[in-house]
Length: 304
Image (cartoon, rainbow, N blue to C red; front, side):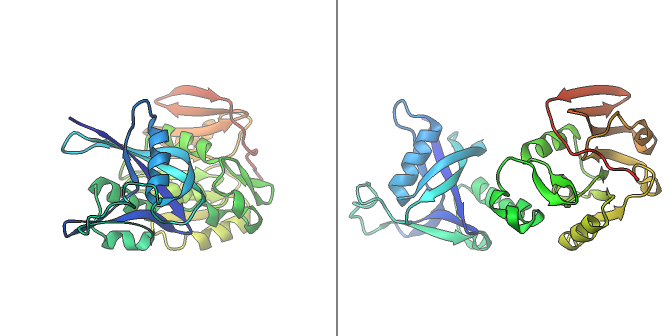
């Protein structure tokens, strides 16, 4: 009968909490987790199994992976916020009291870089962790005085009257862009460079362009993104957009305009998409149609 396994992904100081297992001579690694008890939620099972297997206290942040394996078993992985505890078996757990010398249960913190060297199951969870190693770290794009808030879902100042938008808003706007491989994408108001970095990994073989009116932010973002080959950043001119590199498949405006900038349509391919905040709404332009999504806040778009 298929079963459901609830799993915890806990990251601390660039290390992932793992269970080192040996079973009848077979050595492998898994994320801490297990099956659900009667009446238990997925989140509840995740935290219970985490405490039993590793003695770590945590809170559930969000579900990051949900899949069914070849045997029909469901695996649900939750990203969890570490609270307290030392990685060791709970002395009252079944694993701690196991007397079978052919069985080993050993919780350990493993650096993200070492994940690729481990034999880990399920394979799909290992693939996720290997991709996680390449994820863009928002902390690198905020001033030092705000680094402690880098992973909060809030906008943060980056200097010069500009902000880095809150992650949920960025994710929503990127979703509206419907990004596919082999596209050319322009961000207007690229600021810290964080969204450019996210765009660079949104699909394969993308050409990413950014324009920013604040010279200091252009210089800073170029330094941060110097190792990403498919990003080019320009100082903004008196004309909105980047006509010299047009047309674009997608145009993202990352600051609020007073009205929808129709002049950008001439820089867009025929089947392209523009995302632009207008006042407190996000406007999506596609195939000459306008969709409005209200309830957002942005810094105003600066022009000369």
